[in-house]
Length: 233
Image (cartoon, rainbow, N blue to C red):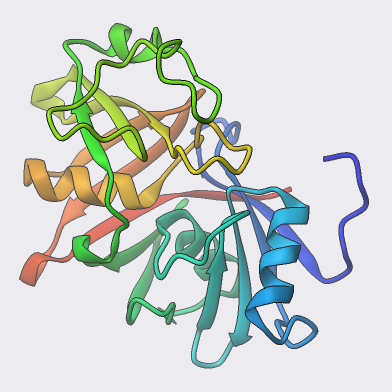
């Protein structure tokens, strides 16, 4: 971004690689009171242009409100990992439900339920190289992206993945949100990793985008942990 950010906003990168690079940008508004309604929050999220922006309404309870540049999702994995790390929270409360956080060395983990994630198409490819070779298409353009239509005929939110090393649970992935909000590819998406872990039923080590890293692990009662590194920009 070239414009000056409004005061009181922290910018993080979530799910960074081991060397601290990459990760998905996240804006965190520590005090949501100057943006009292959905209209003002949506306008700020669109102005910032990050994949997601989080407004903190009550840091004691971990009450947060999440926005993309054009939507208000009830849950977003990279948002919750980031805000938990920034504010050192034990519990985060988006509109989807209560999310517990823990800290393990360089990784921050949150526990969530797959049904909280927005719907998307999980598309498996034959190799990591096939995933890396995919082109990003402009919103509304289907033919230029070398992704065949799914059996469901869905051309919206897509998550392309392939095994790098199946025995070790290593996956190469890329996410194409298809929202038409100027973000054609997400660098790292916790919600998609949540759904893929639920489908495969095993712990995963996901390399997404240019080199972001997402770790996941199935938990009790159908919950799943999502973990990653966070850096303050």
